[in-house]
Amino acid sequence: MEDHDLIREILSGDQQAITKLHERYVDRIFHYIYTQTNSYHDTEEMLQDVFLKVARKLDHFEGKASFKTWIFKIARNVVIDYYRKQNKERQSIAMEKDFLEDVVGENESAETTVLRNFHIDEVLQLIDRLPSHYRTVLHLRFIEEFTIQETSDIMGKSTLSVKSMQRRARSALSEQMNLEVSSHEPS
Image 1 (tube, rainbow, N blue to C red):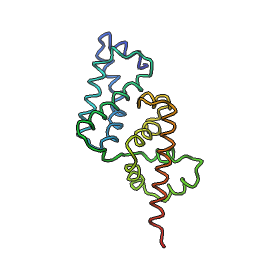
Image 2 (image 1 turned 180 degrees about the horizontal axis):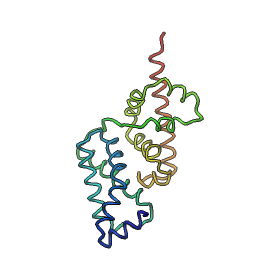
Image 3 (image 1 turned 90 degrees about the horizontal axis):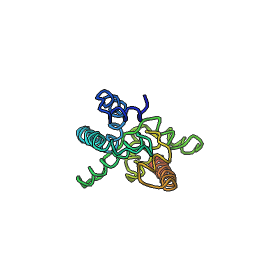
Image 4 (image 1 turned 30 degrees about the vertical axis):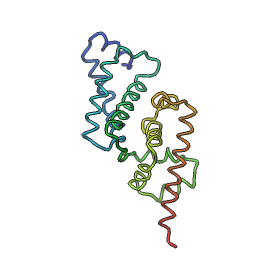
């Protein structure tokens, strides 16, 4: 059953449809929020906020974007609100191994070679040093596999801005990796 069918059923009062829609997105939204906060407790609280906002605003969902894009935009706004309230920097990010090749790019052999010399933990630490908007665009594009258009909708940026930000994020990660490799080479 498609998301729009579930939404229609939810708006008609079907409680099972609510459960199905929740189950469809809860793990993905949890993972997204957790990569933004690195705090299990905070993630659980924000996850509840996301689904509460979805429940309150579902009748306003117009379907201009996909439901997936809409719910991730709500999740992103909840994370932004969290950091505004907490007035703190994001502490870390957890990326999956498959993400690394996508971020660096298959055709960029120098970067791929550098990547092979890193352990996953080292790469995650390097990603953690990137500005938050770079971490966000990399997560949405390569972990969640949103299109450029969907990412721009979630981030509230133009598609050109997202493309440029993604390019700069990949370049910044590559620079971090090269600096790390050079600092560990024997003299």
